[in-house]
Length: 266
Image (tube, rainbow, N blue to C red; front, side, top):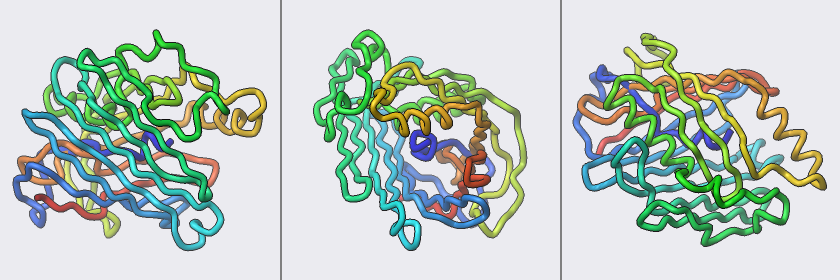
């Protein structure tokens, strides 16, 4: 699920007049609502250009949620756009869960082979290993979002399957176009207008929790059920790149809705 929230995703070319400006980079704030309650904000930044891309997202629980489930994460990626998939140079996912560090860094060789250069805790402590052959030809979770943004920008659809290795798990993200829609104005979002609706499927392949982590395996099994996830993609600023303007899905705690709450070009 974190992979889906790490979205600098796509908007269409009808940005709100209040933010109609061209930008080489964007700073984005997303408001996450679960069961109708605002639970946290996520701050994202992205820059796409001929010399490469960089993108990242920061989230941290606070208030009541922060007291019962203290969690923070900062995920970042950088690389080049060439060919059908991005070519990442480095991916980092640094954060903590209940004051326990969760640190991951994946570096890539010039020919695209991922190498896990930092892992705390080591994946093998609690997860089954990801075979070396399954890591080949993959990108990181943030670059996977860049891939679908690039697909929408170039082809006008989001029909792409992206092989992902995040240093601990190997899975596919399967994006598919659901159609064009118009998002109505809302006090929760700064974007209103046409958008491309994309379904997202998470297909796990390797890196499951080990048998001694039965509770985590059960939770992961529930997460893997066919839960419909819809991303709405459109350019948030006139002439800017596509980014996520909304995400909708169901969860055990109620409907999850992520709205673009603020955008700044710079």
